[in-house]
Amino acid sequence: MFSSTSDLAEDKLLLLYLLEKIKLPISNNQITQIILENNFINYFALQQYLAELINSNFVDYIEQGDKHRIVISSDGLKVLSLFRNRISKNKMRAIDDYLLKQIENIKKEITISADYTIEGSNYIVNLKAIENNSILIDLKLNVASNNQAKALCSKWKKNSADIYDKLIKALIDD
Image (tube, rainbow, N blue to C red; front, side):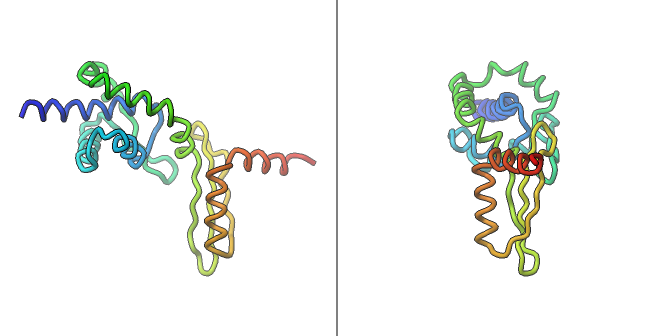
């Protein structure tokens, strides 16, 4: 029993550590991806721990635009500072290494979004870029087919910075 209680505490502290290190509001899906890719916690336990951390006010669930994001709270930071030594050094190193390799992709997922909806016989594509909680661009386009909508979303996700720069230049230059 003691080892499972100890493991539970370490797992929750690991989640707080991840949120502190990432320094960004991230989605439940992104947390899940990081934790599962590193085989730290199974999916169901992870979801339970996140809910418990939210209920204990160690983690805040915020809305950013139309997305739900998770951040560590000031209480969570206090708890982490008191009990950080209970997290395995190997697990902390694994989180640090993962973030070092993946932080740019994570930032891109957080700041760049592309999706579409169907309205009648048309597809409305919404392309958005956010930086420092400010909207850089929020562009809606009406296209005729599902393939066009998917292609626009794909290109935006891959080349949003280039597309944004070209759009700004086209609108500003004479």
